[in-house]
Amino acid sequence: MTVRVVTAAQAAARDSAAIAAGVASRSLMRRAGEAAAHVILDHLGERAARGVAVYAGSGNNGGDAWVVAGHLAGRGIPVRVRQVGDPRTDDARDARENARHAVSGDPPDGSEGVVIDGLLGTGARGEPAGEIAVVVDEIGAARSRGAAVVALDLPTGLDATSGMFGRAVAADLTITFGTIKRGHLVARGRCGAIVVVDIGLGPFADLEDGAPTLVDHAWVSSRIPAIEAESHKGVRRRVAIIGGARGMAGAAVLAARAAMRSGVGMVRAIVETPSLAAVQSAAVEATASTWPMSDAEIETQVSEYAHAVLVGPGLGRGADARHLLLRVLEIWKGPVVLDADALNLFASDLDRLAALLSGRPALLTPHLNEMARLVGQSPDEVLSQRFEAGRDLAERLGATVLLKGVPTVITSRSGECLVSAAGTPVLAAAGSGDVLGGIAVTLLAQNRDATTTAAIAAWAHGKAAEIANAGRRVRGVILDDVLAALGAVWSLRVPPPEPPVLAELPRVGDPA
Image (tube, rainbow, N blue to C red; front, side, top):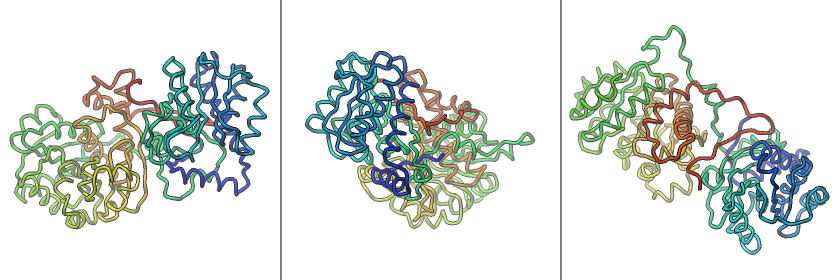
């Protein structure tokens, strides 16, 4: 089932549509609470056996918490509940009445192994105040004593749409209902592991209202181009990687090695002359040539050779680099990936870039600052609208835009939006984008669809980082480890989640 990445308003619209179609709101609450209890027992069963503290707010998030409490108590788990404010909805009141008889009459005493945050839900705005703020601090104190904190729908104090927070619960596990919220993906460190559960929204969870699709293993595995038994290196395609100015040979090396790890048949690295020796010694599978290049050399070294071209890794911003970039795009008319300085060199010249990209599959892979330069905004402005920022640029250029970050947002020229949440802070290092570029140019050569390429590349890049980072702290894991893990990504077998789970995202980053 597709999982959508939604704003608070889009989440509410899905609930409303299901209720208007005849799904009882109490049924949604019951399904949410029972599914959450199932996940808690699955992930934290041993710790829950030592006791569970439930903090229930006055809204429907508190009602969800009461359903969880009753279900856990029915499974023999010692449960203590603190009601924070009187329930304000009929559903929340009924949930409390139905569970009260099963739970302890005593409030939490701090000895519990699991603490459940059911204070504020998706519709909450602003920083917690009053008694809620006090309880947020109490939950934090329990976590510092070793309790595992579970947030229902999202941690209290975290804005579901923007991911902004001040005083907020820090969760080890967040269980979200029917959809994943933008705020979860922006503030991954605050959410811990994230599990999306089915609460019975049915087709209304997948409303076509512009909410992006979350890219997962099933989405990727159904779209990776197959390499058949009779394939030879030409069938696996040839790519050219253009960059590697003096002092930046490493960027071209990383891109070339990533392309090889992603299943390409042949790579040609075209680098500035001083970088040639370094590239040929570090990327031994690749052939290499040098720039500056004449038009005739571009024709033979690029146009007559490549099935797709990556321009940008370590290209530099000098006059020779700009001339090369323009001539390559004028002479080579096939699929292209533009990254790094290939984007910076067009920062004030988007009309020309649009003309040069016209009629071909094209993928741009900017990071935040490169995106800001391209669209003439500040980085903060781009950051505040990361899910929308690529739309106008993709339409204007007739290209797919992959905005790197947490999360990575992919926008097609038609406005389709996909989100990859794979990855860890291991990727927050120089050269990470070059690895992504090498993956992307390989896939673009093999399938010629820029949007599919972007989503697969972003997910594979992130998943390789997760594999490299697994069981280790971020410090000490390098891009060489990510490249080594790419081989495992392509053969990864991930069974589909079992109901009621729709999707799971691991905790990332070092432990707090």
